[in-house]
Length: 185
Image 1 (cartoon, rainbow, N blue to C red):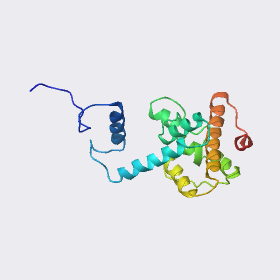
Image 2: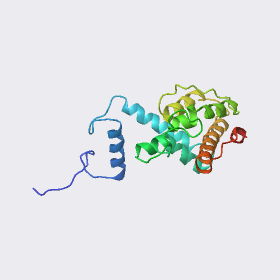
Image 3: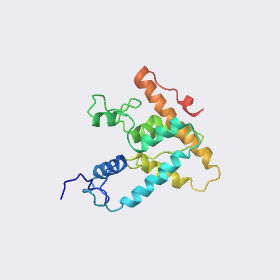
Image 4: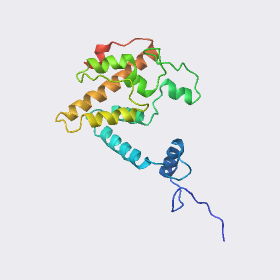
């Protein structure tokens, strides 16, 4: 019998970038080599639902792309940079009091909370939103399910997230603090 290369994570044995990516995600979730963890199917369903909602947002493509990256925790916030062994201050540049994760920056930071509260949505964001952006986003999907003005609400959500990111970058790269009202106009 002749030796051949096979990819053990698919029944057909052929490697693809998609199968490699999915395997890496499984390993990241501490799933033992090819075995499904309890609840993985529901997590995958939730991710599909969240991804679909992002790509249906009535806003610019760059905002949709940014939000998708937020849900996958690949936005270059300080916490992600430190995990990639890039030397930087791990604190949030806006509040200087907590680690800058994606969720902290866009939802839990006192600066972000004020933006959400004074926005047209009047959203009072609780501190205990779990530790993932996707959990927060999913809670908003449930909250606004069936509302007639749903598309307008999501346009505002997308715009606020983008504007908080721009303000953060303005602070980091230009050493300028943001004007809160600019974010909600």
